Length: 199
Image (tube, rainbow, N blue to C red; front, side, top):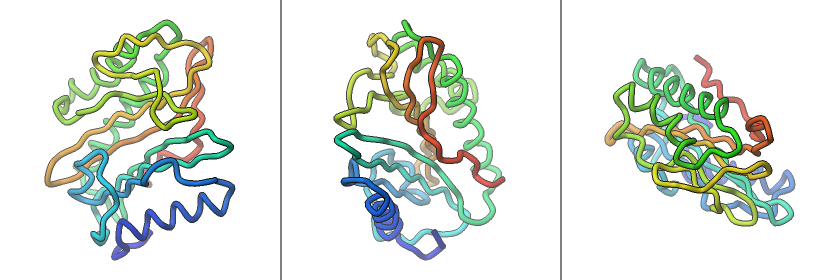
């Protein structure tokens, strides 16, 4: 990825890579949202040219043997500013705390509250406008739902996402998403992509 590439060009590169490495197809229209576009959690890739120094939210997944995958990473080309560093570290802390604490028997609401509390205490609660995660399998969105109102009970063997985010109109967003499988003693993270933003 280089400054000047459009969001659509990056999305195509990502999808092409997946297809040439065994994917049947993309699991959904890939999200590549740079700068202020990143403030919209589910915006589609546009002709906007990516600029150095701004956040780029990339949400992607593919289908292999009928099963879906889903992950998000947020990067910054060039040197990130203090605001990006602060928000990135906050979202990462919230995600890691949730992945560490989720256990069988919790409800989706209880799991969501782990990450949400960290983000709210930092003053960004209103900017975390979606649930913590969702089940993934034969469809991209399945039970269980991990959200503020969810009473879905988390059980061993369930596969779901853990994806807190912060979205600021006019600036952009940061979301970090892993797919996990719930074991008897907690979650096993399936996503292997690095969460390091290089700073």
